[in-house]
Image 1 (tube, rainbow, N blue to C red):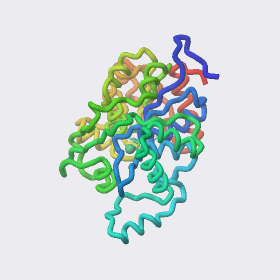
Image 2: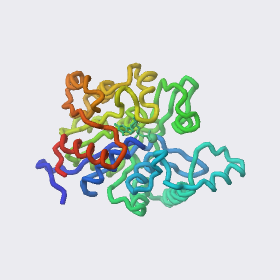
Image 3: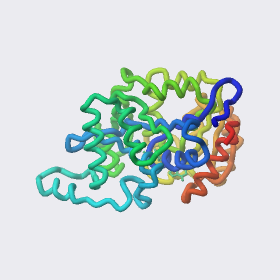
Image 4: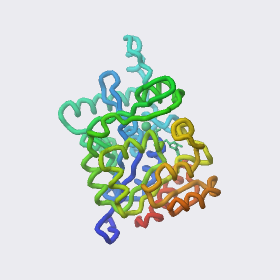
Length: 321
Ligand code: GDP
Ligand code: CA
């Protein structure tokens, strides 16, 4: 049974990228029923490799929820082998994007289903269910949106920047190609209208959450919604737990990375802000931006941390669990 908040709205909408998003999504999925949680995932990182449709953030979230994710890398299938990739290299492919054999099977199936006319939402839900995931994992859009990085080394696709160039070029601009004409996916649109709380997972604000917010009407609907909207900071003690978020604050947003900088980035979009104990000193400054603030442990290593943080987030938003 899902409890309703009294205004007819129920359930939580979680906005997620890959690794950081997946961690909180796992915690939320452990405490909320499948009909009380919708996880909407960034597809700005999607790419075509070897003719196949790759959705890295969707796969990270799905594998994590299914308990199949590689805990060492944060991406890919636990225990995967790379025989097909080795063969691709032998056959002359410029195989810098690491895809395991299990991964490739998933991408083959996804591409085939898309070619048969199914939407990315339909395909994602079907594949996630077959992997044992009970909570809905939804792409932000069924239409292509591609994050293009403008860097000191020129323009490049997200995967070129992130994987091939190991996030080394300095990000000085970002475009979400196709975002203007893409629509938020139907389940995402319904969730925006019906949920009782929105959670911004601790994902990269620029590369994982901003593409979602760039879709037509999404930012406006979130700003206008009167439900609790909770941000969980991906920056802890001035550093990103993983990935280029901290550096992008410096090179693109031109400010030192901090929980406060995250709060400023999302100013006006959310009502609640969760920061790490390490950042307690900036509590007042974040409150001054209009947020209700929770200071707690936000580093998620074990499932117990994911569950504890998710529980705190739901409690803060008044969501019964
Ligand atoms: P990506 O698409 O794989 O890059 O993943 P996301 O954008 O979802 O997540 C990357 C962000 O997650 C980084 O900025 C990290 O700082 C943040 N992150 C990763 N693990 C944790 C964690 O345990 N706690 C918090 N608060 N942030 C985390
Ligand atoms: Ca990503």
